[in-house]
Structures are given as C-alpha cells and as structure tokens.
Image (cartoon, rainbow over all chains, first blue to last red; front, side):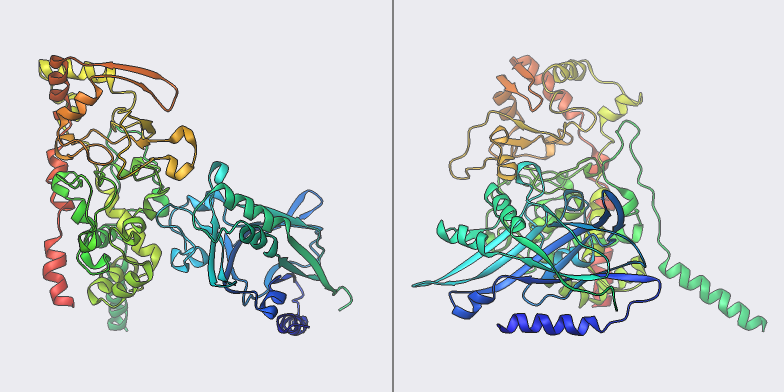
Length: 224
Length: 343
C-alpha cells in the first residue's frame, strides 16, 4: 500500500472519532488523486495540483435540500483537507452535484475574498477569470520536461466549468477521486506541455477530468 | 458619574468620526443611462476615493517604482497617453496597444481594446502584472503597501482598520476610476438647453448622426461593442483584437469602440495609435463600407467640407471641466506633503 493511501486512511480513521451535534449532521468528502503509482515509479513528478470545487448542492430526488454557502473551495490536492458540509439533522438526500471550477457569474462578479482572492494565484489578471485547476510538474523522459496546465475559461465555447453529480446518502463519508492520468496521457501523447489560457483544448481536458472523477463510499455510519 | 458619561459620549463621537464612512453619492449625469457598475458592492466614500487617487498616481505599484497608472493615463489628456502610439512600461519596455482614454467607466461592462477585463474592479491587475507595463505581482504590491505608514493610515481612516487586502486595494482604485466622469462638454450644455451649436457644429452633428452614431452612440459616444474598422493588421503587432479573447473568427480584428468625448486630446488614435491626427482618422472613414457587430452594413461617404463640419462638432465634445478637474489631478498634498510626514 502506498504512503499516500495510508495517510488518507489514517485521516479517515481519525475523522470517524468526531462527534456529530444533536441538531446537525455532517456530510464529509475526502479528496484524492490518482498520482500514487506514478510517484512510485518516478516517471513524472507533480509539483502543483490545485483545484476549485464550487456550488455543492444536495438533492432529494430532484428537490434541492441543501446548498453550500461558500462560493468556491480552493483545494490543494497534494495535501487535501476533507470537505465537510454541516446541515440539519435528519436531512434526507440522495444526490450531490458540484462544479469543477468557478462559474461565470462568480467570474464576472468583480473582486472577491477568501479562496477567490486573486492573491491565491488562481486568477488570470491579463484576461479576467479564474483558473479552474492547475496541474504542474516534470515528466522524466530523456530530458526532464516541465509541464504546466492552467485550465479555465468561463465564457461561450471556452467555458471549461464541469458539473459532476453522484449518488450520496446521509451519515456516510465519501472519497472523491480526481483522476488526472487520462488528461495527462492525452497531453503527453501529443507533446503538449503547456496550456495557459482559455481555449478549446482546455475545455476538452476539463471534460476528461470530470468524466474520470469518482465518488466512493467509505463506511456507513448510520449505526454510530 | 456625569464626567464618565461625558467621557463616553465624547469617546464615542470621536471613534465614530474617525471610522465613519464619508459617503458620497455618485452623480449620474442627467442625459446618461443607468451605470453598469454595481455601486451597492462598493459604496462611494471620499476616503476610499482618496486612497484610489493616491494609488493611481503612485509609482509604488510598479516593480521598480518608476511607473504609475498616471504615467500612461494623464488627467490633462482625458487619461490617455498623448503622443504615444504604444505606451512604455518599466525599463522602457514598449507595450503593444495604445493606452485608452479613461472616462465614464461606470457605464462599461468590459475593458481594454479587446474586452479582456470583465469588471472595473479587476482592471488594475492587468497593467500591474503585465511584464511590459508595471511588471509587478499582487502579493508584492500588498506587502509594500502594508509596510507603508502612509497607506496604512489612509486605509484605517477609510475601512476602520489598517489591513490592506486585495479587495480593499482594488475597490479603492475602482472608486477613483469611477470619478472620471466626462459629461460637461459643450455638447452636453446644448443637450440640456444651456448652449447652442454654431451653424457649422450643427451641420457636423447631422453628419455625425448619419455616419458615425451607430458605433459612437450618444451620450457615451461609444456603443460599447467590438467592431471591425477595416484597418489592416500591423504585421509587427499581429493584433487580432477581440478574437484573442473569444477565439471566434467573427471577432477577428474587432476592437472596442472608443469614446469620442475629449477626442481632441486623446491622440494618437486607433488601437495601436497608428494615426496621429483626427484628419487621418476622418480620411480613413471618408469612403468606407463597414459591417457592424449587429450585422448592419454602413456606408460612409464624407467630402472635404463635411469633414471640416464634422471636426467642428467633435470639438464640442471637449470637456474642460473634466480635463482640469483638480479632484482628479495629482494629489500633491496627499502624496508629497502628508506622505513625507508619515513615512
């Protein structure tokens, strides 16, 4: 078992000890990537992997029952903290949806604070708009090849935001896994090592990441 | 007991006086439409305008403290960079577009010749971080400002504490930019019934309405759209205009329509400053067919006499009150006298 997975399990184990207040319940998502094996065989190294997740909404069938108040969460996927949503006790839901990236209304809203502060390095100053996710590293080929993918864009055909929906239930914890490998393989095969602006290729890569994002249940806590 | 009571009353009074916002209403000119800027997110306050004004004229925003916003946007020339086709940033680096004149920004939704910037509050970040302009980074600028007693005092007065954050920094600059309202030209006086055009100006106005008003729409004298002006691409700059942002072929070599207000002062003209004189611009448009962004085909035909009359009208768009407004000029007292005391 690789070290990263071991750490994730320890984090999950400790988080299970937490108490849930009488009036509220928490919906928890642990976050991870699919980089472990590649760190092991040293074929490349990731130096930066940050992502905006936004607009978390919980539904019971088609009815919206809970909406995250935060406009967006900026997550460092190399060392991620779990995402936790506190909602009223006994709130029933069976589905969650969220965006990978920042939506267009937030992108045109002017200056924002917290995770959306341009100081966080996820804002294109030369062309307004947020970078939905950044992936940077070095590919260890004959020569060390740096790569940088800054994927974003919010307008028209260059809108790279992606919405994911998963089946989830109360009193459970889940792991969201962002599998970047299909996207990286796609870029490496075409020797495309830099994407730094909104473009159709960025939309295609954002779709690839979205299609390869999974949500799996950790453990049922209903008997706690 | 009474003394304590009086003390608390006085303490409360001075505390409130020190941090209370000095609300100032944004005055919309009567003949202007409703502004696009969302003032409710950044209510106008004279203390915040003061900060924005100091920052606009302060070269501290550039990496080597040599260039301020005003270096390329002089108040005496409607905040354009007069006589510079392309502006120069730090270390004499030449940019790739003409610095646009700044006025009536509250009515715009996007900024720059290609509309790259989608909100006035974010505009300052573009020149600040451009390596050809100020070549700075936001974190470093905020560090510099947070080390300055002068700015910390100004922010404390405006915001109640001396923390200089990104939103306070950008909102303060925005407040100053919003003050750049030009609506007191002779044209405006005529419209409000307080002046009359000369015969030649009146003729020029009719020519303007027939040939130019589709794109240079009154009262802002821009339709705020991106239009094709049939100028050939400069091979050295290879500037594709709006297409750079949207990557749509229909936006190829389309540029944002500049306002004609104060046009006598904003030379050289066009997105790359290729035309030095107003007559060069009129020469370009004297016999031309244009397809607008709304798919309207416009034929412009101007003879020599019409160009003279049109020029006479365009000169009625000069707004002396705006050009020489002391509230928009270099804040000598603030930056030179107060700063010296504070630093």
